[in-house]
Length: 536
Image (tube, rainbow, N blue to C red; front, top):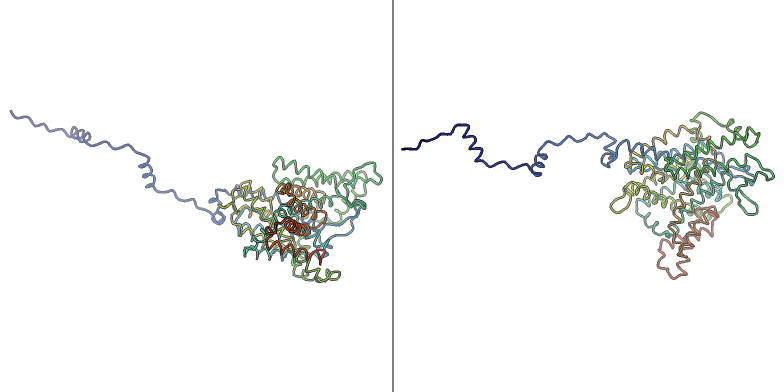
């Protein structure tokens, strides 16, 4: 009997076929990745013109972070507008605290306030647009004191002459940066001198601040002395101790705020000191103190709410003086020889360049290291461009009528706040532009308040003293001579010169002549010649 052929139903056929086919493998990471790669990529975020130019998103930053950083930097360094104007319009006082003469005659606070702001805006914009780095520039502390107290007061040059030397400093700095000679000169300066320069400048600045506030006074027997707070002393007047007291309390307040990481502590210290000064002076006015009465009388006679008065003064007293009267050295030559002038020009140009160079390099390394803005070799990114910004900024500042424009160490406050690009610097420059129109308010800041800032900056600059190897007698004497001559000799350039000469003599007498480079020999010889033919 034949077997009956069974034909499966369509349903059964489907089941059999499905069972016969191998099961599909479970999805793996590779297949998931392939599917993700095959999927269309999301459209890239459209960047605006500022983001494209500054690379804000690419740097991992945001507009909010950059703006906050720019404001932080401004708050940390805006004090320079008031302090620099105060230094350039400083007076010399007698032992009794009475004004004798203004160091730079007929130069007003408003003119220097605007000149300082113009220098800060120009230098900071260069840093924003050329180097595209989150750093800001303004007239450097220390160099401004060198210009006023060494070039004008001690050497006898005019304000316009000093601006010519500042312009020369900027031009030389441009050449040194473009040719690479900057590095060779930097290496020729002994390490001990390099470390001592900021220490000496810091002490010099603090000393000037104390003098301006009357904390340190002249004395015929000991030359200088600390102000007396003796209420029982003959001739004691309440008004005579207000400024010294405010300056000392102000610097202590700044230190306390710095310890507590208060942003803009120097600015708040200045403003707080100013408020305390007027409170104490008003109290003296109520008691009938003549000195306190004179303070308010002077304000009533000179104060103006018109911010454009400062621009007018700047236009007639500062801007362009470098070309109008800067090359006229007849005032100096009337009492000095041509060789003496040549020596002053050489020593001053060298000092300005050295101070500018060392200050800039140290600031760039310090600020950039705080924000991870160093390259693979540990050097600040866009180093040459930033150095060029300093050089060009100095040239612009000289034409505007202010001293060397340099990168501010306070820029590290903005970097620490998150600034990574030039947009931070752009915000800071914009703030300085607005501040230009606030000169009437700034003019009310007393010298006692700005003295607090000067003293505190001196404290900050003392940090380099730990870099000196005091256990090495050779290095110790070189460093000591460098900064002690700066302070007691009232001259930054003389301190640098003595330091370099001392280095050469020490190496010669200890049998280490090979450690003296050719450039160092040249610098020492030039300084010796300068000391012999000029008072610097």
